[in-house]
Picture 1 (tube, rainbow, N blue to C red):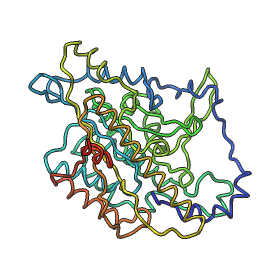
Picture 2 (cartoon, helix red, strand yellow):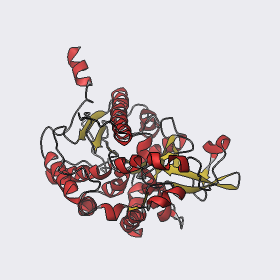
Picture 3 (tube, rainbow, N blue to C red):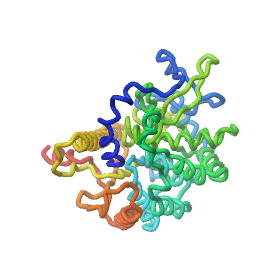
Picture 4 (tube, rainbow, N blue to C red):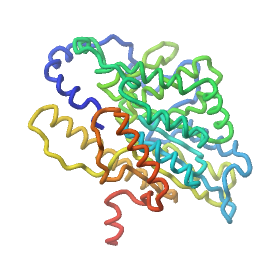
Length: 405
């Protein structure tokens, strides 16, 4: 993602001497207690990604018990057919995913998703997608009318000496609050009670790890701060470090209050499914019995970006070199995430599918949150959803290996 790339690194050298010695006040959790910190007033709403979680294992078991007969289709052998959707990061490229989802609805082939996960820009669209196709108009509006002014305000260069980011995301926060109304929060809580799940990822900057939040539990908690917490998590997941300010959550350890710093979930992973957090087979056996047939699950990954590295001549300037390196690291991380998720799906017998922006797409603008460019991406995604070969069944590069066997 190229957002703020030139501006961030263009002033980097000028400010380095000043910024390296400046630090804004905070009250962080002691390192030895990071794993024990909890959000005051909420229980079982989050856990670390990438390792088995008893909290989320109990949650997925409960989700299966909450299902109504006929809510999810059954195969001829009686097994349930589940579908999951994983939405990636990508900033303004999220317009592609929004268009694809709307086009998927029009095609008549969009599944009923048991699980929706979101990272970064994917976290912003995930609650809308979770509620179903009837919210497509809201999804389209969010990604075809956005511009810089609706996302962030640039800070004065001198204010960077006492700031933690190059921009103020008050406009984006306002958009999130406007989107997550009390009615929307209630609708998410209702779907959660019916066995559906919505998980969002942020990066705990102190822990250096992915934190996965159970948004349905938060929505249905009845806590007076539930809506505020819900919105703050979405904003944290989309807050690009350095460009956007991190979000701070009030946490508690043994009755003592501290703050947790959370930022873009894309910092630790570009997209996630369940990342070894869950034992789906064990959950199925616990709910349906040891003799129950295996579920026939499908995973759909929506990548708001291109996986192929774009060839370009890099100027011999610090901002260009660092910006190019970060772009390549992000692309490599996205490929690695796909390989990891593919390995999980193959082990668990889950049908793997992913779609991304075609490699031959040529943007009309490289400006951040350009409305014309975002509309073009939306329309391209919308049309692609109607084609027969839009989904890839294997990550890039592995196809050649499979063919050689």
